[in-house]
Length: 280
Image (cartoon, rainbow, N blue to C red; front, top):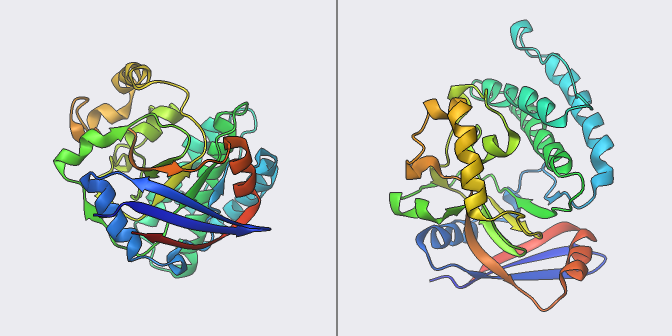
């Protein structure tokens, strides 16, 4: 059984983070996948440092709008992305623009176009993170190695999905093309195209290292989620009581450190490179 996950970051100094792994099946499956995955598999255009610096928001929106122009150069006329970023309603922009990614991704084979579309999706999610809680700091590392290895989630694994987490959580990340129930709920997206709603059904090496506390308890999320579910297109995809709803994320482990939280976040934000990772 795997006991620990260790990841080393590099900046002006080297920072090593050690996580005590959960012993349940999904954590152990994930550990096996990440142990066979190299940092060379990291998605090249994805910035792992998410929500560490809110001042980067204007730059990210500018990048996205420039990329939309590039996408529209090759998208068919009926599929062109109309309208850019609505600065008065960030979430409306996220919900409106996101549909183009799964809509186009499924039919693409050209590597250059797929790379552009993947960056488009990554930028939308990064901007969403930066704008959803403007008065809160929610820094996390998003690590997505594209190695193609995925293992189906067992029915008994679904009980481990939780909406809340605490500082230092290591969480399994969503690995499909589409939007999952907790994402839809968090975005208030009641009109997502049905074919783009995909509850998580696989474990991949994708994971997040979270350096903030979820502000609400599980029962609060569930109550609000039921009200959302009743008016959302999600109700046409999965039954509310079906465990395969996969509401939230699976915690894989917990950070072990004596460094005060603020100091640790400062150290991590001073890094810009992932050197290595190992499980043992």
